[in-house]
Image 1 (cartoon, rainbow, N blue to C red):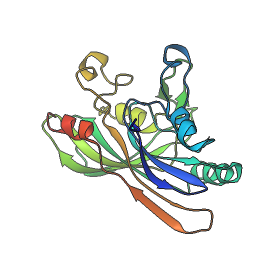
Image 2: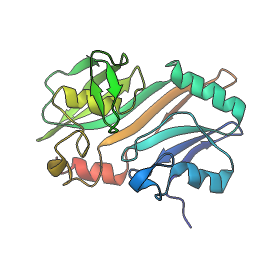
Image 3: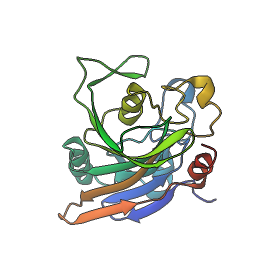
Length: 215
C-alpha cells in the first residue's frame, strides 16, 4: 500500500515529511477522533516519532518530526525560539494591493477552536509579498516570525483577505466551493543537531495548482 505522505529526508534524528491536505498532523478529539493522522501513519512505518511543530489539517507541505527524545528537545526548541525560517505559499481572497507588507497583531486562542486578534493576545508577526494577482485572488509568499495557531489564516482574514478554501475564517458557503484550503508549507531552513544548515522546499501538489487555475 502506497503511503499518502512523501518522505523528503530521513535520518536517525529526524523525518522531513510532505503532508497532503486533509490529513491531520496529530490525533484529534470530538468528531475527528477516528480520523487518520500523520503521527499514527509514521508510527506504523518508522516506530516512535515526536511532534516538533504543527501543520493544519487542510494545509499541505513540509513538516518535521524528531525520532529521539534528544532530537525532540532540540528541534522543538528551534521552533519555539524562532530559529527556523518558515515560508508558505498562500492564495488569499481578493486583490492584495501592496506588493509586500507585514501584519503585526496579537492573537489569542478561543475555546471554540478559533483564534482572534485581540489586544491581550500573544505578539504575532506575519510578513508577505505578492507573487501573482489572479482574477479573484492573490498568490502570496508568506513568512511567519512567530508560530501561533492559525496565524496566517487569522492575520490574512483580519486584513480582509482570508485564505481561499478556509471554511473556519472565510465565508463558509463561499469557501465550500473549493476542494482544499490554499495554504502550503513551501520552504523550511534550519540547523541540524551538528550545526549544519539544512534547506527544504516542496512545490505545491496538484490539488493546489488545480484550484489556482479557477481563481
